[in-house]
Each structure stands twice: as structure tokens, then as C-alpha cells.
Length: 174
Ligand code: PRP
Image 1 (cartoon, protein in one colour):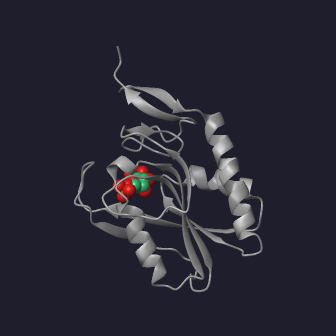
Image 2 (cartoon, rainbow, N blue to C red):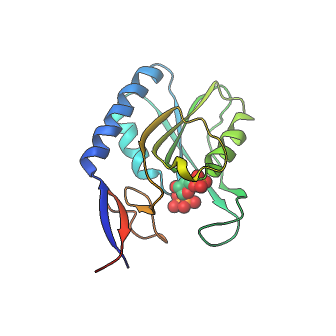
């Protein structure tokens, strides 16, 4: 396997998470927000973010997947695991590790908005705008990343490398 090369360090990530959490604390204080993580990638970011926010929040998860195999699938998204918490009237914050083509969050935002939340916003740690296929409004964003295959801090390559604490790209072994 190619050797992972660090592109965003764990310290840089921690600083950015703290910055996002400070803003979210101000915006959601007293609102008992429901943070919805998209499995699996977002669980690392979500767990750091909610602890850094340091206000009462609730947490739930969805799992979505693209139809078909391979890295470039058909673009159709299906819901594999739904939220278990009633959404109506709640302040919902979708928490995502990376937005690439935008298809996953576009599907989820449309799906959740039908359930009439009091508010619905999106927080993404990494954004890859060069790959976007559909427009998505990102209310809170950490880093813009280039069009390279990134792994670590929850992001995988065929289920491996999620555990890496830094964000890395894969470079060929010399
Ligand atoms: C990744 C990532 C996002 C999604 C972004 O998840 O965590 O959820 O792809 O892609 P998009 O913007 O092109 O729709 P993946 O489907 O690889 O599943 P995982 O989180 O379980 O790794």
C-alpha cells in the first residue's frame, strides 16, 4: 500500500475543531441541538466536536451508501440506517467528515427537511469543492482540501486507515 503523507496535522485539526466548537457553542447555547453524524467517517470528528462544544447536545447517526460498487458509483444514495430521534421541531446539525461530490449530504438534507426540524444546518470538517456535482450550503466548514485521496481522522481506504490521527494523502513508495 502507498505510504500515508501527513497534509493536515492532528494539532491543526484540534485547533480547527476548537474554533468550530466555539462558534457552535454561541449559536446553539440553550437550544439542545441534535447532532446527526453520517456513518462511518464522521464519528471521529463528531466525538471531538461535541466534547469541545461543551454545551448540552444530543447525538444520533445515519448511514447512507451509494448504489453500486467502486469509487465512482451511480450517484444514487440510499438510506441504510435512519435516525432514531424524532426530528420535528429540533435544531438539527448534520456533522460530516468530508464533502466531495455533495451527493450524500444533499440527499440527507432533503430527507431531513421533510421532517420539519426547527432548523437544519451542516458542519463539515473537510471540503473538496473541486469534485462537487451538486450544490450544498455548508454553514460551518473546517478545511478546503485539494482533489487527492485523503485518509485518516475517520476517512478510510477500503475500511483501512481511519485510525490515523492526522489527515494524510497516499503517495507511492519509493
Ligand atoms: C464518504 C464521506 C462522506 C461521503 C462524501 O463516505 O464520509 O459521507 O463519502 O461523498 P460525496 O460528497 O461524494 O457524496 P463513504 O460513502 O466513503 O462511507 P464511510 O463514511 O463509511 O467511509
